Image (tube, rainbow, N blue to C red; front, side, top):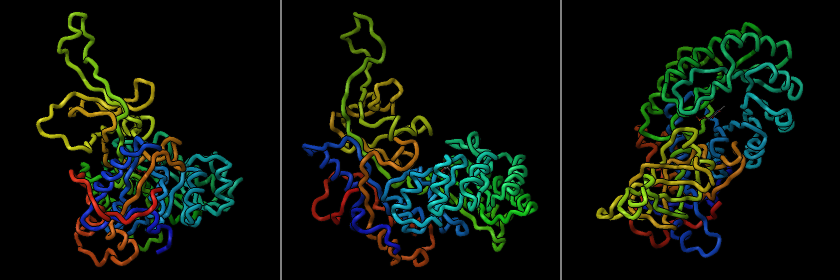
Length: 460
Ligand code: PLP
């Protein structure tokens, strides 16, 4: 092991128990706390991250994964990914500092943001971060002046029309402009070492990758013609973070592999990278949020005579997190959060029309409406799964800070796998078989666990 992650960084979940049990213990502890009461916290299953990595290696064996730090910059995630040997894609100085602080060498960092502050370019130059992204002339001029030894990766635009979060409006050079940019780089003595693209976050269209790989081939040819020695192809991110999406990761990977074989065949001397965010972390994080306030609201404004009658009502629940924080994906990804109730309701309990609202004093902070829930109380906990991407640290808009407490957990099996005792090759051929046991089985149980289920360790 490289030593980025130690047993002190997470809670060891022993066989037969799950992160669900851990979450239940923590919510009980939080409810009983007399001081420092928390109203929201994450449980992160680092084994789920290990499992994703093994699936990645199996499905995209020619691709070297980098992690997009802005997606979730929590320390446990960075440490486990560093331990797995990933590189890191950073969007700014704070993210570069963060990964360098845990010991990641500069050679494993890409400063990928195509539009950078000069001070951040200077930081990269001082700290040995050599690979930088660009998509316009002005950026070339800044780099020529502040970081002449940089190796630049030209970010090209893609057709991201189908993606959940589109990026090509903001980033990426058009194919038409690439020759001019590459000529300009040559004139400015800036070395262009590769091409990158991003098909948009949450991309359901594998053909978008295939088309972008074909486009990248053209740019490589123009680059070679102009004397650039290009040897890096960066496939960006966009891969799904959860299972059960319309197009699976495996299907997308298979389209990518065919396109790579066609345009960048094995032995062509090009190093293939990807910068993934969502894929690695979404399913690993579960958020628990407690209800801070509650009120009944009449659905329609009643007339005076109706006021005491049985006019239809909805229950409005207030939480301490909202769409300006951890639930920002409601605004940006059209996500519809669906809570799991920590206390299982009995089947006889009536269900009421309900909505969930965040703490901001504005009418936009609506997390979910149109839910049918049993009557809940202040202090009850709601649990949201698949909350790992673009949640933690989003208060700062980009990674580098952590806003909500995270308790990390890992099954002993995942820990052993990470330590190299269970190499992927020794396991079952089937992907599910390889990966499943590494996560701590997730299920909220009715019974509270007793006894030494978790090896005590610090909570970060
Ligand atoms: N690379 C770049 C340049 C990005 O802008 C992003 C996300 O916006 C990512 C990688 C990660 O994308 P995803 O979370 O879709 O994998």
